[in-house]
Length: 120
Image (cartoon, rainbow, N blue to C red; front, side, top):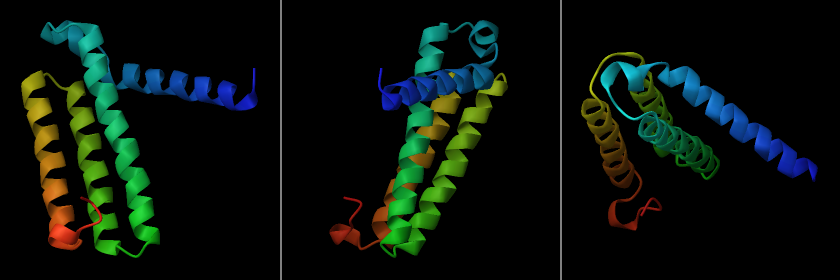
């Protein structure tokens, strides 16, 4: 097995470990199916990875304001992930996540050129 494949498998193992640590007993406490909650949390984590990646890219191509907005979005999505440690309903957590992502997208388009935005 190649070294890249081994590192990728380790990365996925850490990804699953982080999800388990974040979720705790949320599914059991609130009556949701565990696989569904894990899927939602992994979607949140994937969005965090994408925002960090694009935040770095925007920083290097001198869109400093967009980079700061993406870093702020990352922090807010981490906050949404931490809501799984509470007893808040899943619909509220999902709606807060959608609000953060929508606000971020609208702000990125407005601050980086409107209709000619590289975000679009």
